[in-house]
Length: 161
Image (cartoon, rainbow, N blue to C red; front, side, top):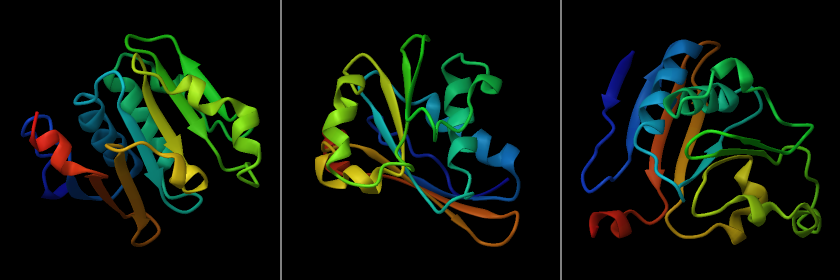
């Protein structure tokens, strides 16, 4: 895997830019990110349909002890909570059509201080996202290659830890 900028860990700051040429490399970036996550962290995955968001979740899950075969696209169930330590909450908002549906889901009841939460299609709740979320953007470069950018919404917060 060609790493253009590595995951930087300074006061637990997480950011970087990667070039993945296959799904296993995308999982590996997710794994490396997952090893740095702690309870209360929220990871928001941005990217078009088929970009590799669920593949990234598989890597994150493996880092916290979940068999990646348990991770499937949750597009039909919207929220899946895995009983790991800490619990992983996988949220996929692809099928949500309007902001009006969000309160009905009780979405924020799943996003707690004792869980690691991963949200696919976070654009649909952008205004409600708390400060300090970790943004992961996966952009297809060609059929197999993905550019993965990891950044924090408010990086200065972690610099001051």
